[in-house]
Length: 492
Image (tube, rainbow, N blue to C red; front, side, top):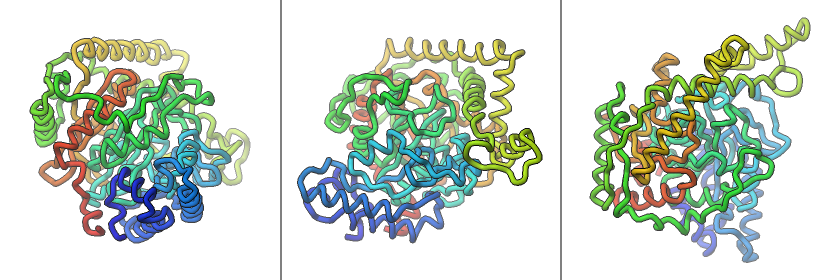
């Protein structure tokens, strides 16, 4: 079969279970596509053919024996921030270029237990810091819709690998929009779960109170299949919440769009920099939901101007703390011929980290320093609580809140945005992480340059099933999620 990469997760599962094709055949199909296409896209940092084929054979044996899970034998790509035993785990950094993880992240363990096949590890902004995937030590990943453009970030490799049909779905992490924004830029569905819904154990930390793993795929249904695997409590993660997990696939049609109250924050649609064609596509998608029976309700979110400064104090402060472990002593990059211990520290860190990571470490260290801790970090945490309360007040009136996922579509590679311009591009996504809420991106059309536009739906705590269900029903009535990127069409 030549079109296996065009099948949904449900179709792949049924095909494997019914013996229409084997996991080995499916895996080899994807490995051949990676070999043929990925030199142009640059989505993979490490491809693991031997591991993948061994896992595929094990899945085939389990299917033959009749004791396989629903997803056994389906290939998957992991963002290179998930520790993977025996495989290089770099977080897109020179600092960890030589790091072979001695253990698996919980998300990787769960994927293995479900019988999923690991194709490899995909590119990302260094230590998940960035919105374009250009800060990676391994160079920029390209947007499959147009190779002159970025795929977004930091989970740009995860988005590109699915958009180019080089994996059926992928794991990503979202600290300030790093699943939703690249999903928007690459025309995919991407879910950022409630903080604590998916274990962070074995995820290389950026900002511990903000990081959350989630699925990236073509459709809400495909995302639901992966959520069924990765969600749940983990005793190894102290921030993981011991709360019953929904069957996200079974609940695909559980939420009726008819009568659903969708909050429209007027402040979100008056943000400076919101592109006219992005605004138009988002408003068209909301009109479609309204035609399906949803009720659009104007709501106030009054803290919008505080999102960016609050996030860019808290996230760098936590990054400064988390990244202090990379000192050239224990593991990771070490400079050559250090004169003394201080020289080892200084040169290992200055040579091992890229510019964006250094910038955020400096900002965070400053915010945490003795003279400024109360004035900056503590005040930012107080504002964070106000942002959360602002959302909770809105949820008293509505079921979900709608917004663009990003104010623009993808940027050109090498656009050389200033750090401030790049940070302002995250205005619609940051608050969700600050409040710990779940949110999802759904593709809703193309801009004037044929680049994808995304609608973001933000839910109340633990409403992942509801968000997936709403988007699934929207996708039953539209075909935006089925549209293929240029490079995928050329290599159909």
